Image (cartoon, rainbow, N blue to C red):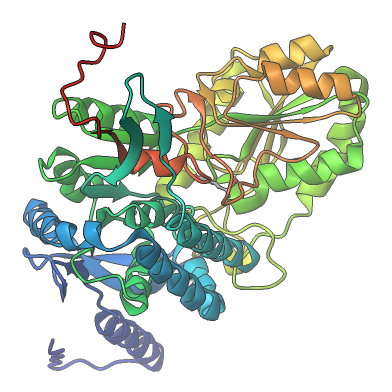
Length: 525
Ligand code: UN1
């Protein structure tokens, strides 16, 4: 691309000149960092030639790069490539597919710091957390690598003599993978590694807020030896890329993480073609603190759960259910600790809370602050966007705590996805469970108590896919199933052994070695 600058009769003052040089420099940098789709074995622009910018949420003036704004025609090309690659990939032995993923894990380990830095630049969370995000991907790679040597089926006795019965697992075809921006590496790995090791090809549509990590991830897959065409990445919006992907007849299964609203739309769209769909959706996770809890431990838990990742996790602690006997004491501890959390650029070591992903998310939180006030809740802390000092050009929001929240308020029931915590007062264990379950979501949950009987009752009675005892609501591990009940999902799990069921079909095989016709249910009784 050629940059031409024409000035006629313009006298620039010194200040203007500096500003001009800065803008010019930014422009050159922006244009030089142009990224592409990887479709049908080639790095290509969107067919329309359109692009979009990816900016740093801690400093909106920093452009990370430009990415293709793709459409249906790009999706068609990606699906075509993936379908062509499927036969050779499904016939590659699963342990060999797993070996490639082991190399992916090795490359990710070697590049962990660089991947984490770029991730912080494009989505804001602090460096320790982005390193954790990459580590979750590495752990998932090594787990997937060994899964290539398992993928167990069953052998069971036949009801007839001289007959052998088994079930085996076979790949399904092409998986459409749609991922969010809050875990730009971990969540794609949760989906793409099992898809690949099971023998499926992939068309990947990452969140448009985090296209850089996604692009680097594809580069790593190719470097490790995933054959071109087996993986494809198509950048763009949900409407431009996600919708054609979901509706494409060449896509056999969809895995999506995001909001319950979008999840329902996907589910409806996929029902016409009976595509298999895995949905990991919203949450309104709560931490219960009983009167016998270790309050210091519970404090650390809620601070991390509510304000880690700036509250932008589907497992974030959005409600604190606090026993009345420790209510005042714990609130004092909580507000004074949360007040001191340091907001800033996640690349700086002293930062504890990074920016929100974009202006829309700041406005969503602001919307809930208004709703909470109108409903009669009181702000114990925060409530405003934060624009001080180094945060002036980013999308920051103060840690916000609502008190005097009642179970029927919207701020007690709806997902906010930001640094906002609603505190509810309870007087007994039974009331705590009732309040916790009073939401249409059911992802994660937590209880702090020293009473082992209460802990076991909580494990049984809380309506959630995940329950932590004396730990915060976040902390998934790669080898454990992850997912939720109610409107958090549609029954599938990511992570651990269960996700491998999603990416394969069961084939039931009978081998009759009797040498004669044997009619099941007729010749045996
Ligand atoms: C998500 O926010 O979508 O357990 C997933 C956790 C994270 C996963 C969060 N490892 O909190």
